Amino acid sequence: MSVVLLHGVPLSARLYDGVQSRLEGPSIALTLPGFGGVPPLPGPPSLIGYADWVAARLPEGGASVLVGQDYGGLIAASLAARGLARGLVLISCPLSAAWWAAKVTAWPVLERPFYHWLGGARYVRRAVEPGRRVEFVRLHPTEDPSLPARMRDMARDLSLGEICTLPGLIRARGVRAAVLWGEGDRMFPPSAARATARALGVAVRWVPQARHGLPWDAPEAVVGAVVVGGS
Image (spheres, rainbow, N blue to C red):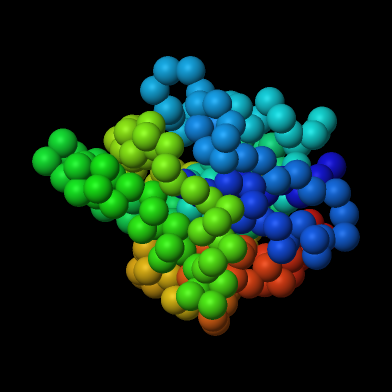
């Protein structure tokens, strides 16, 4: 069994370069369809579609630990709720109604400024600490003209009710969980981190000098959580 690492939108598996180089056991970092040069899923993007795509690529018996950042955390949580992992590490990913903001900005009246004008470029620049930004931005280009619509459709697809049921399903499976949050995260507030951790029955692991792209800013913190989750 392996550690499986899932990135958020609009990033790629390169988010976990520093994590994989520090992990002692086998690991798989997947780039999701529609990002990092991987062809998109057929049809409209959906959380179920992404979860099924990842499930088909898990090692036999599932993952020892599923690690997910942002949207990748929703996928990881969905798979953990199916019993496809022994451990779960959520990074900058609320399992609560905090995703309402993403859905609101995907409304027709707001989608142009939030998705077509700003697109993923602003997200990528703000995701990590300034001193770690140059290489991160180079590895995550956002010039793909289909990217804004894909991000918008992924946001529109989210079901806040289904997301809020995930912690109970994960706890019922007996999955060991950890919640990591950068103290400099500008995407979701601290209250979202605390609500998610409380629902999972754990405490938030606050990581200083880290933003929303925490695996890039602080790979050692992710490795530490993976070791605990897989024990």
